[in-house]
Length: 91
Image (cartoon, rainbow, N blue to C red; front, side, top):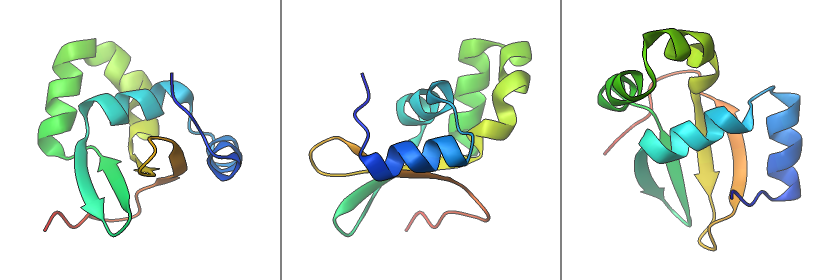
């Protein structure tokens, strides 16, 4: 069960990012520490692993929604979600 802040709930709804996409990004994505938060996103390897796990047809249906990232607070709640507009720095 994912815990959202009120801000994250508004952003997910406003940006039309379904909970399924947020869960998949969280489960299969690459986690990176950025200051006081953890940022999760799908890189090329994560996308390939996810595609193998859920199948090509299901992946194609949700692929556009997976171009997002999730920001987690230290208590495990989701601070915000947004679409990636460019490359995420991994270093």
